[in-house]
Image (cartoon, rainbow, N blue to C red):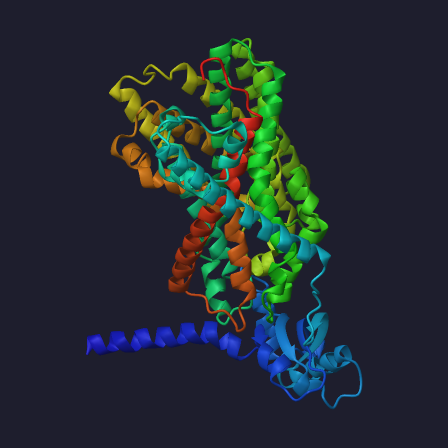
Length: 628
């Protein structure tokens, strides 16, 4: 009897919860709705069909005596972790609605929504509307044709050079009487050889021990984490079939993890600063003095490395990709990206995109490349100016880290910004978070990432100084290293997540400014200690796994995967023709698919573009040291 009573109670609780959550959706209009796009435009007898994506603002029909539906809408919209239920996002085919209406499409749809929900005591007003017809608004122009021809010629050139070089090498092997080497022209052309570039990616038997191969594993892991976060976000940027699932998730601790991306991305900056310092001090040790020409050459080399792959992706988004498909969401996602890449491509090439986020930049994830390039230029200048005395370097790094704290604190405090933005459903929808000042202040500004530069330069100096000797010699020091790095690297994100659930996060300007200006510093210091410990052969089995050959190869492809994965996310979201169902299984499947596609595409991009440009820049720009 007691067991039956428990079952009855559980069923009653389950029914109550279902009524509280799903019942609210039954009593209110659908937040999202998409008519059949293809049937509307291509499978209809209408002479001039139109498909309109619109936003509808709901209001009570009688404000003084609001209906039950409006009370529910107000209650659910009052929680910022829910969608705004007074805003409907619908995709409507006008053929069946406006075929007999005397007036414009805009007037027709406005009249339709004013009367559609009168039975619920609601009226709707169309606020935003974008309509499409059978004819695409994007026409193939001269720019599209130019990019197509250029890509075709370049691919043919690479294939031809590869075949020609293989013929030359085979002829040299057969002609044993002639041991001539490749001419300078042949050496320059050899950088485009597909076979040679594949060998470089796969072969790890060169001087990589000097540059810590575990870094490639860190890069691979970071790239996968970035893809994971972006897939998770893109899963929710479009209209959902089950929006209540996202609203429930937004109230969980796991959701807070994605707000910590600002400190995760900073690992990229500390790695590049650390490697930059190592190369600088090795050259300084070999030659005794590093001239300003090294700064210029290193800057140009960095620019070529970043730009060679990025310019191709920008060109594709600004020209060819928008013509591939059409759909109810295609224009909103790919059309917007097409417009941004046509108008603001120069921000990508000048690496000032992080300053132009509010204006809309092409490939939003490339803000990190802008920050990285700016930190590279600043770091090279600091190294060059302080090369005579190490203490000047520490003073400069101390000033950089202090500047990070002071500027970020002042910026957050004066504007009353939060130290980390919670990715609510409304902010996630069509990536509206990108235009939130708090997100820009804590993620994309150069000042909020200066600590990575300071720590990277200092740890690069120590890694070079203690390259041939052990600095951490006792087990107690190694144990202390494990404890401190774990606390800082793991504890900082957890502390941020805890802080976002406290009263201080929402009400204390002093707390949010102080924490937001120091959380990255603690995390970055932990990462710096982790990298330095690995360079001192601390880490045991964990470090050996990170130095495995497959991890090295994947790390080599991580940069290409990073810049190209966003393209697949855009295409995937733009191709959705029905309401997207959100589930953990589908997210895992999408992550695996995107990682696979990104790294396979990165292999092609690296072999055809990234490695050839990098090798060519080394051959023509980089000056070798006396010992090389």
